[in-house]
Length: 322
Image 1 (cartoon, rainbow, N blue to C red):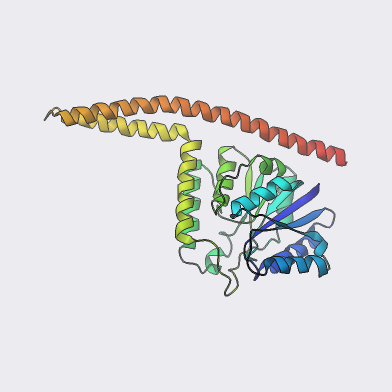
Image 2: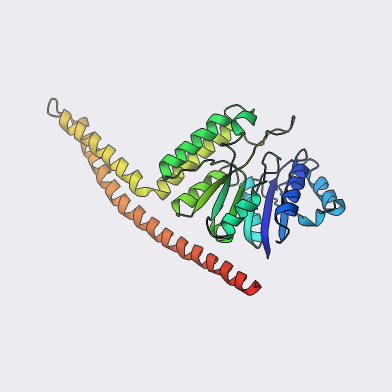
């Protein structure tokens, strides 16, 4: 089992994947000389020269032995990372995009925070450094701000960067995080997962530079933006059932009372039907609140037991190694 596994999900990154690998190799040689670290490039059906370039690097580069190339045939970043998390055995995991936009110079600091138990997830914070001046893509600045504010508001957190692709995780986090979507909602799901399960997190500033000229982003601003918004909404309904159902209860009850009040001035069958219908809907929300909250409580208990077991496994492995 390696001390740190760095996962690079790649799809058509021929312009930048070697820059990413070389940058990480330099960081490893400088800051991780006393640890076992491997870089895992997971190719996701690339049609360009990504695979040949990585293979050539592994065979001929001086430090090519640090790199492993694997393949995920199910299309989607989420599915690629899921396969990597399932296959790789490590004490600590890192994830970074293969587009050479992240400065991973603080990777050792992020690793130490996780390894020493201060956090289950550490995020590379682009938004506090150079992101807004470097990014040239329309709507991405506003989108990053909007997603950050929405998640922080709905889930009671103070995340600094929700959509960052540079993260470091504990083994317990990786082995208990369910990835069910293949697209670019992954980073949002990671942040929400930590928030709803009360997993300690931290942010470490990381430099950011825009993609190389001619190297286009795989993110569809409008389509993927809609998916992220939907993901946040669905997650809020599922993980915050009390707030959601009580809000609907209050809304339905208020509408019902308004219809009943209006009948002081004019009584009609339609108003009676609507008043009673909204009254029943508000009562139904009370029942749904109890059912949904009970289910969430059971889910959370099962998750905490699973998370605890994975944490104990890491401790046992460490003792065995020593």
